[in-house]
Image (cartoon, rainbow, N blue to C red):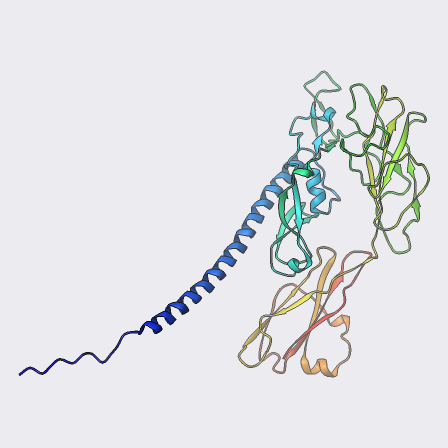
Length: 401
C-alpha cells in the first residue's frame, strides 16, 4: 500500500518578503543610476569643453597665421576680443589671406564661482606662453562655459601684419615688405590698434576707416611706456605726447576705459591704470585718425606666490598602509617652482624652524615605505619665485603618522 506523499519542507517567499526585496533592489538601482548619471554628465561636460577649446585653438592658430598678434594678451576675454576683430577696410582690400573675424561675435564666457573652483570641475585658462587655451581641473576660478549672447555683438577693426599684400603702392600684383609689417603708425607702448564704431561719441571723430590718399596720423606716445614697475619705482603721473606735425591734429584720451576727452594735463596713475589715446585730424580731408594707443601700468611687488598643496595617498605610514605617495601641487600659473623637504616626525618635534638649505626642487610624486619612516614624517613645501618682483609663498606643512 502506497503511503501518502509529503510536501517539500522548503517554502517560497511570502508576499511581504517579496515586497521588501523588490523595494531594496529598487533603491540600489536608483543609487547606481544616479552615480552613473553624475559621472556621465561630468564626462560629457569635459568632452564638450575640450571640443570647444580645440575649435578656439584652431581659430587662434588661423588668426596668428594671417597676421594677428596675441603678444601680452593674458586673459580669455582679451583673446576672444582679438578673434572677433576684422581687418580695417583699407587693409581688407589688399591682404592676400583671411581678413575677417575668426569666432562668432556672440561668444561670451561664464566664469566659475569660488565654490565651483574648489571642486574638480573642468575650467579653461589662457596660457600666454604657449598662446593656447587649456583645460584644467583645479586652480583659481576659470571659464566654466562658452555661451552665445545676442546683446554682445560689437564689430571691432584692427591692423594686422602681413608679409605679402595685394598691390596698393606699386603696379605689380602685390606689395612685398621684407620686414613683414603693413601696419601703420605702430609707435608707442603696448599698442592695440582697434576701431570701435559703437563707442560713445565724445564730440570727436574716433577711428573712422581712412579714405584713399589720406595721410594716416601717427599714434600718440606716452612719456613713460606702459609696463610693470619694481617697488619704489612706480611713477606718479604720465603725459600723452603728439608725434604729428603741429597744427595737424588734436589728442583725445580716456583713463580706465572712461569717457574720451581732449586734455593735455599730466595723468595721475596708480597700479592697474589703463590709458588710451588717439590722434584726430583737424582737417579730415587731408588726414585720417590714428590707431588707438594703449598703455597699462602695473606693480611687480604686489604679488606673493600661493603656497603649494600637499596631498597623501595614505594618511598613515603604519597599520594597513604599506607605502605612501606624496604629491605637491603648484597652484601658481607662472613664476614659481616648488621646494620641499621631508623629515622624520621625531626630528621635527625636537628641532627648530627648517633651513632653506635643506630643501630640494620638487620634480614629481614621491613614494616611501612604512620602513622608511616608522614613526611618521613631516613634509614642508613652499613656492619659490623665479621672476623679479614676486615673493616666495608661505611655508605649508603636512604630517603623516
